[in-house]
Length: 179
Image (cartoon, rainbow, N blue to C red; front, side):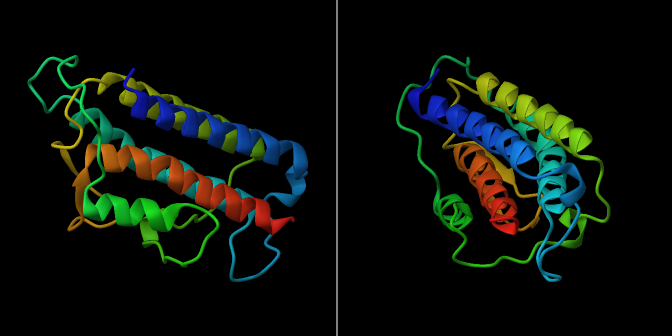
């Protein structure tokens, strides 16, 4: 695997480890409880991540099939484009800038903890499979459209960089609920 993609794989695994640590630290009955009425609960943070995973799944699946070159041809350096870099930079915790999300990604209800964790694991596995499938493709040249804003496009490497940063942002937010 390309070394930069391996680093992203590690970030996805670290996000999963953070979620498991959260399940050990916060009792299940406290997950849906907001400490502050204007901030999400632990369950809402994880639900948001699951909604995001579901939205990106078809985008990642389709993007990986777009380039006709064999998947072993690209060995150069991967770079985020400007928009992707900007999003990646603002996503990483600690949260310095609040970003309002669109209605489709605001949790309307929350499931039990084990269901949330299971769904998170499902989307993590899908994202890791998609990441492995694009290894060797020129991710700098493949553009995707954000499910958050149809006018926003960035390259596929940026997309794969943003996803774990976004996860860490909301897992950090969930950890702050009970710190």
